[in-house]
Every structure is written in structure tokens, then in C-alpha cells.
Amino acid sequence: MKVEQIYTNCLAQGSYYIESNGEAAVIDPLRDVSHYTDLAAVGNAKIKYVFETHFHADFISGHLTLSKLTDSHIVYGPEANPDFDCIIAKDNQQFKIGNVSITVLHTPGHTLESSCYLLKDEDGTEHCLFTGDTLFLGDVGRPDLAQKDMQMTKEELAGVLYESVNNKIKPLPDNILIYPGHGSGSACGKNMMKETVDTLKNQKDINYVLNGSLSKEEFITELTHDLQEPPSYFPSNVQLNKEGYDDLSSVLKKSKKALSVSEFENASKENGIIILDVRHQSAFAREHIPNSIFIGLDGGFAPWVGAILSDVNQPILLIVDEDRLEEAITRLSRVGFDNVIGFLSGGFKSWKSADKPIASIETISANDFAKINLSNQLKIFDVRKSTEYNSAHIISAINAPLNDIDSNHVMYNKDEEVYIHCAGGYRSIIANSILKSKGYHNLIDVLGGFSSIRNTDIHIKENICTN
Image (cartoon, rainbow, N blue to C red; front, side, top):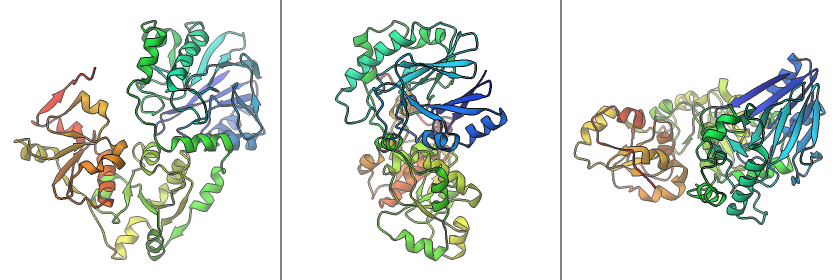
């Protein structure tokens, strides 16, 4: 028996490949499915089933493409209602893969169709549980991401989730492994651990839904308290996962359209076009095309695209080094952004060589920033999450999380010099690029973000209690 976790850091997402005696199954595959078909080829195995734990909101699954390529069956748990042929399993239904089996455990709460999959080895011994977004390490799935046509409140779903975890998962043997659908950084939960596998015993000790520290009512209050609004692209991804999508090969073919400088410039003047620059933040800060938006590949690219651009049908023009073009298109497609209408041939260098207008972002080192902020009179915006800000921040800084920039940009003053920072320098350049596109040109980015700032003499407020 072989169990392999395929973890994608950008999405903080775990998919799984299980193989036994010439047969294989995949759980929650990414849209780009070559990794799974390659594993099957190496093991000379036939992919027999593609198991989906639920209709995903934060990424496009590869279930349809993988099923078509391998002639495998797609399996959902009870209550699923997709618009394509698949197996809607019953609770406790068992599926054979070679000499092992996978049993469906219906665990509603995150969504109504949410299910976990229990893997038993060749001896029939419970080996591990693939929990999807029902149970994370240290946390559970959000109860507010289900399909909007469902007539249950998040509080009602949280109560259902409590029963699912305690009645279906908690009674399982302590020594089984827990393989979750996501880890720290995902928007599908609040306080996930950075680890990506653990024992059920340890989770019974530390996870607040399993360790008995909260009553059902207390759990519902805790789980539904202070939930941030989910990214606006989530419903579109649920719809694509439920109704269907184009194969990645088709998306790549139509998106790889090289545009000359003049073609690119003309296309950028069309209404609704986004010029998306995915180079490194330092290169963007130094020079970029005016009104372009920065979201770099060398960071949390796909989730930030979803959070910032929000509309999956947004027409996109790419500024990208051509050796990373396919990577950019693929990672956009993972969150449903398939409408890349072309890329600048030759990258930013060709724009510069054509003597076209160039913009830049003013920057300052953390040390120089600290020197001029001795009197705490500077206007400073901290674009980290509120939890990061509450943990520690510059005394005079205003928290303006990047997630909310569409609504909180009015906090900025176009006539006042403003300093912006995040944790390390990635998110602040995203914020700078968006604000510049809205007409704010008095912005100064603090290089290295808070991690560099706190190594200076600047006054920091630590460990703020929010309870």
C-alpha cells in the first residue's frame, strides 16, 4: 500500500494518491492532474476512483479531467448534487482499491455533502482518515461556505459539524493518521496548524472540537465568532466544481497568446482589462507599466489573485517572464481565473525598450524609516491581517488589511504622505499597486516589512489581547 500526500503551499492544500496492487485512487486532486497520472504510470497502476470530500470553494478540483483521462469513477458523499455523472455514495459505503479499502464517512457541517474517507490496509486495519475540510489539524472547517441555496444558518451548520466530528471521527482508533484538506494559510479555517499530518490521538488532546473543552453551544459560538468574510471568488469556484470547467490543456492553449508592445498597449485600453504583473516585488517596485496590478508568483499568488481580482471572468493581460508563463496560467486556473487574453512578448524588457511610460514605487529601508519616525508623526498603514496586527504592531500604525483594500482605501489621503508595510514586503507592494491604480501616488513602501522594522529602535506594541 502506498499513500502519498501532494501538498501545494500556495493554496495550503493537500491532495492524496493511494495505490495498492495495481489500482489507485486520488482524493481532492488539483486541476493540473499530471502529478497523479505520473504516479500511476510509475506504479503501473490504474486510477479507479477520484474521491471528492465536498464541493471546494478555494480551488478548482481536477476530478473531471482526471476521470476523463483515466476512465475512473468520481465519488462524492451523500447529499452531493453535481451536474455530471458520478457515484453518490451512501454513508459507510466501502470501495476496494487493490487489497485495501476506503469507507465513506458522511460528516456534514462544513457543507452538507462533506465526507471523510477512512483507509483500511490489507489486513482491514484502520490506517488513516482523509478529512477534507471537516477536520483540520488544530481546527475545523468554516460553517459559512456552503452553497448559498442551502437553507441553514452558519450556527446550525456549526452544530451539525460538532456532531459529525464527535460521533464519526472521535470514536476511531487513536493511532490512525489524520490527513486534512488544508493547512495553515488557507481561508477555509481560522487557526490551522502548519503541520500537514498528525495522529488522531494528538488531535484529541489539542483540537478544541475533540478535547472536550467546549460544550456544543460553546463550540458553535467559538466557531462562528469573528469569521472574516470569505473571498468573493469562492462561490464561483463552488459553481465550477459542481457544474464543470474546461480542461487545463484548453486554458493553456488559448491563454498563451503573445502580444507585441503595440498589441498589448491597445488591448490594455479596453474596459475592464487588468494588467497583472507577476514578477518579483522588488522588480515591480523598481519599474512597472502604469496602472498594472502586482501579485507575484513568488508568494501566495493564487489566493491573492482570488481575493484581489475577485471576478473569475476578469480579462487579464500578463506581465511575466516567459519561462514562467505556463506556471502563471496554471496557477491562475487553479482558482478559476481562465480568462488570460494574452501576455507581453519579451516581458517587461520589451515595454522598456519601446520607450513606453514607466512607473515605480518609492521605497525606504526599515532603518531609515525608524529614524524619521522618532516623533511618531508619520502616517503608517499596516496591511497585515488583524490577527498579525493585534499580536504586535508599530504604536502609531493603522491596521488596513489587504483583504479589505477595496473598502478601506478611503482611509488613505491622496494629499498626505503615507508609509505602507506588511510582514515581509510582498503584500505591501500589492497594496501599493492597487492604491496607485486608484490615484494614490504619495505612497512609500517600507522594505522588508514588519520583520525588518522590529529589528530597529521603533516603538512596537506587543501581545495585544483581543478577548
